[in-house]
Length: 330
Image 1 (cartoon, rainbow, N blue to C red):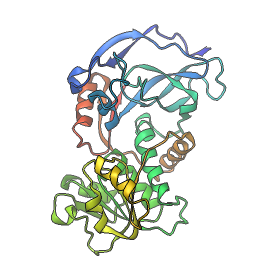
Image 2: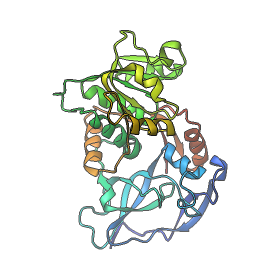
Image 3: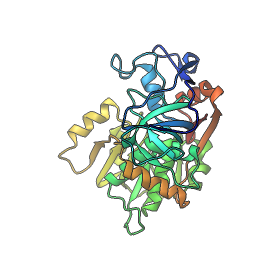
Image 4: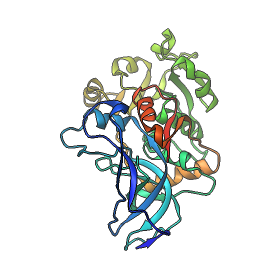
């Protein structure tokens, strides 16, 4: 195995040992640096991006199967390769990379993490660790959801009239930008404090979801939507259906029980509800990184926290009101 200089034997990490508790349950520990399997790389973490899914795991969404305590959370990281496994030829020590960790193992809130080669990609020059770390879960979700509705990102797409809800969140901010690259006309919903931000990243019209028009999902033209990309857990098929065109479709990124039922019931109707699950596809992650490098896509930061303030970052993400991505810099 190739290593960079003298690898430390121990590292600092943040972990929790029970369900619930928010940021208060996160504890700093000194533990051994991970040893590598032959198809892994050791990453010296520079930035870790928090996602709502991280807090859902902590609250026990997947209990009793995940996590195994004590657990180091966070799946999306960027950093520099410090060591490569014996079977690794794609990367070398010193490479700048971004990686998606397996959610049932995680490990991102630490100074070092072992990542699978199959879930690691090179980070282009000019793309910072913080920018890259935001992409794996949120960026891929946005990209794949827009691909479901046939979006072309090379400027050749005809475009449709679409609505993006929760547009100021991590996934939403990527989705608005990517939708505009696909020539869509974008109406977006968010809270009042984020209306200007969402407009600045490309939305054609922004609705405050607390106003009567926002609650009704009604744009100024009154035109129905060809597609709705829903990112809010409180969205309901009964509210979406009247806003859809005759063959309109909802792509639900945060399905609740009622929308899962609607997904089943609308399989043979003209207006459809679809439930979406993201997959970790490294080719698509490379595509997103190139867009960032070219200045066509940016990571919107809610906040960037030093490692010592990881608990503050955790609670900000847990609040459900982050504007863009919450990053821990290590």
